[in-house]
Every structure is written in C-alpha cells, then in structure tokens.
Length: 94
Image 1 (cartoon, rainbow, N blue to C red):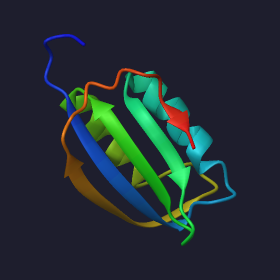
Image 2 (image 1 turned 180 degrees about the vertical axis):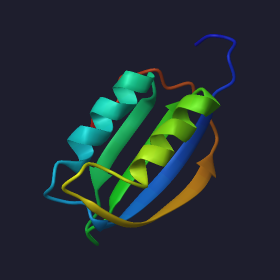
Image 3 (image 1 turned 120 degrees about the horizontal axis):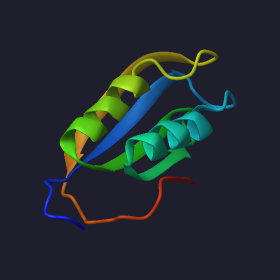
C-alpha cells in the first residue's frame, strides 16, 4: 500500500440488480478505477459492494453504482463507511 489515503465503503444496491450482469459490470468499473473489494448478491435481491481505494476513485465507483449498467434498474444505494483494511487484492465477485 502506498502512502495515499484510502477509504472503504459498503454499498447496498436496491432495484433490479441481480441476473443482469451488475456484479460483473461493477468489477470492470472498479478495476478500471483501481479500486479493490468485492460485489456479491444478497438473499433479499440486493447487491452488496465493498470498495476500498483512494477517495476520488471510491466516490467515482459509488456514483456509477447509482446508475449501474444499462440493463439494471437502481432504485436506491445505501452507503456506510468502513475502516480501510489495506486490502489490495483485485476487485472480485462473490
């Protein structure tokens, strides 16, 4: 990890977000931004995203989550702050 500030956020994305490639599209966006973390489907039909990286890059991913890919419908994104862990693994899907 570099000396650059890092933040971690957990986002719960509500809407039509499962079965439409949302996690794969999120992974592509995150990797393009250099953000680490994971996206996974939850049993209630939402998608959970944990993202860590420089604040501007995490914020850019959160902004993208509010739109999602063209075939998804995002109704709401609930975001909470988490402590940064220094996780530098590439973004994955669970």
